[in-house]
Structure formats: structure tokens, C-alpha cells
Amino acid sequence: MTVVQERPATDARTLIDPELRATLAADVCAKFEDMSEEQAQRGIGQMLAFLAAGVRSPAPLSPSPLVDDF
Image (tube, rainbow, N blue to C red; front, side):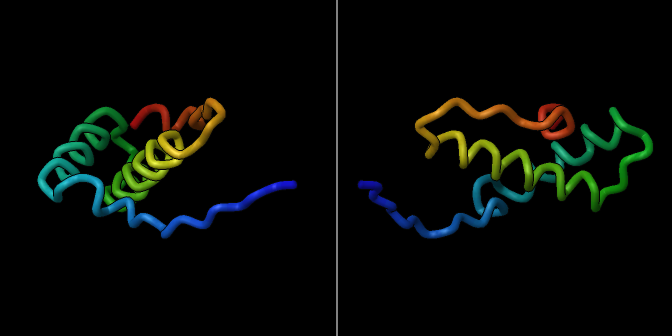
């Protein structure tokens, strides 16, 4: 029998403060000159979602190469 536990969704934007998010976005944009601010913000969101998923997963997870850059 499989038991499924539902957990409330976590908004990744709440996991770090706006100043840290801005610093991370600036760092990524400096590293990848073709990346827009919007893409950097989306990537940070994906990185935070990956970290949140990793905390809750009983199995090891691996990010995509792009998320790994964040």
C-alpha cells in the first residue's frame, strides 16, 4: 500500500530575501553575459525549487546543468 502525504506548496521567492536574490541575479548575469535579468530570476527560482525538493525527497536528486550553475 502506498501512502501519499500532501504538503503545502512553497513559494520559492520566500526562501531568500530580496537583497540576496538581487545579488545572486547580478552574479549570474555577470558570469553569463547573454542572460537577461528575467532569465536570472527564473533560474534562481528553479535553483530554490530544486533545493526545497531535495530537502523533502528521500532519494538523491540531481539538478540540470543550467540549474547547477545557479
